[in-house]
Amino acid sequence: MKKTLLISILALCLLPLAAQPETSGITMEDNVYVKGIRSVTVLPTGQIHGEPVAQLGNGDEQLTLTFDDLEQVDRYYKYTFIHCTHDWKPSEMNPIEYLDGFMEDELETYNYSFNTVTHYVQHRLDFPTPNMRFTRSGNYILFVYDDTPDKPVLTRRFMVLETDPAGIDGEVHAASDVNDRFTKQEIDFSVATGNYLIRNPILTVHATIKQNGRWDNAIYGLTYRAGYPGVLSFDFDDGRNVMPGGAEFRTFDISTLHSNADRIVGITYANHENQAYVLQDEARPFGAYESRSTMKGDCFFRNRDMQNAYSEDYVNTHFTLKCPFPIEGGNVYVFGKLTDWRILPEAKLKYNSNYQYWEADFLIKQGMYNYQYVFVPDGTETIDATYIEGSHFETLNNYTVLVYFREEGSSYDRLIGMRVLTPGE
Image 1: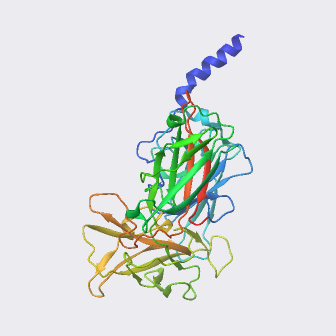
Image 2: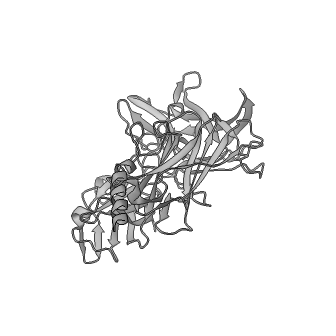
Image 3: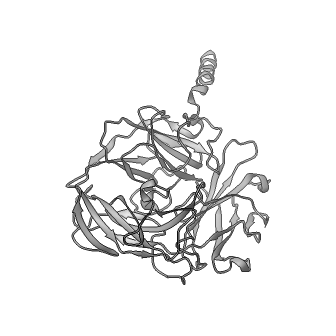
């Protein structure tokens, strides 16, 4: 009895020491905090595309983090996990409430690039591991740092789904509002709650809609509109579940440096770097919808000329854009997974008055890519993918629907359902 009491007292004393990691200096989003870190991915283990989602309690289902360190400096990489709310704020739980095992661990797997002009070290982590397992579903941040959390390296979003997820049924179609009929898409869906006892869904259930790989324009905090026992409807007529359709992504292929592949017009070597030139693009804000098969803005790394692992080289890739109208009041950027779905300074287009086009060039890894040109108005962080590309209701976007449930009296949002919807399904 005395021994049990002593253990309980020690546990209570240690509880404050297990608070969520220090988050000052980092954001609860996909971000990189030091130079030289490139090509960051979190994917289902063994896959080249897919949502970063693992299922709770499924020991055979892992996610894989990879990233390249081009500076190859001496860093002692460690990592931990931060549990978040449905709208990506740190949750109120302590790590000991959502992690089984250690609260932090080391990144031990790395490999050096092979036969490349640009040398790098690729780091890899397959998780969860026997040392750190998840005991709660929901949104998570994978936080990688150099020895101590006050020296952040990168953060990456991923999700953990409940063992017995709720069913989601839905469709993507042209917006119901006649004014948006030809330019926007409406995402209507319903949730079959199954074994989840939801007494007050208006307060405890929230849904998120994410378009392709982007989080910056995601729709958060949707509450159900109607329903009947066991089914919640998220079919709205007020535009809250409507998004611009945008246009199909542009493509190019730099998986070979021995010839010009898809939409590449030149491959050279200059300034101690590989150089690739993408076919000149045209602005298309008012053009007709162009149908093409794409990866929805994604990319994957590949070297077709060499089968060795870690042989993908880095290539300084040049983009040019012809635009028949002046670009004023903001800047245009190359955007997609190739920029980590972020607005990067090196991806900003500059006007070349000699040739009367806009241009940018930056270093990316060999592979196959999708991209678009987006406009960011001065003084804002709003990303407008329609300014250069236009918007069409027919565009084959992927919409990921995520449904969260916070039980009454609970301190965290459970991820109880996920479904990817595409127009025409």
